[in-house]
Image (cartoon, rainbow, N blue to C red; front, top):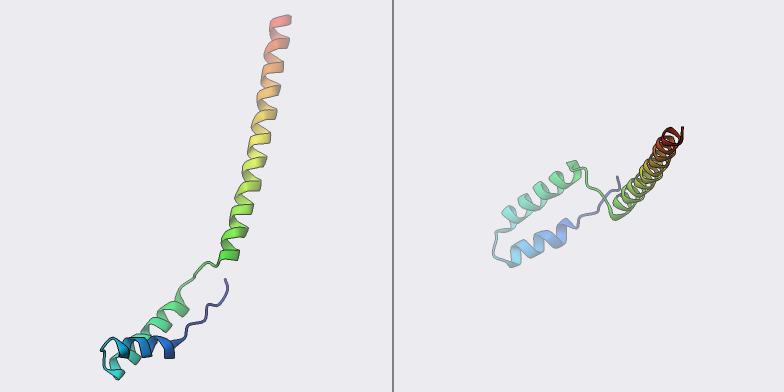
Length: 82
C-alpha cells in the first residue's frame, strides 16, 4: 500500500481557527497522524488493480461455464442420437 501524506500543520491551524486551544489542536493532529499511519489504506491504484483482477477472473469463469455447458449439451445430444 502507498504512503499517504498528512499535513499536520494545516490540520492544527484549522483546529485552532475553529476555537480549540493550541495544545489540544496539536494533540488531536498527532493522534490523527498516528492513527492514519497505522491504518492499511487502499489507494485508487490498489483498487484499480483489484478490479482488473476480479474482472479477469470473472471472464475466466464465464468462459469455463460456457465451455462446460456446451460439452454437456453435446453429450446429451449424442446420448439421444444413440
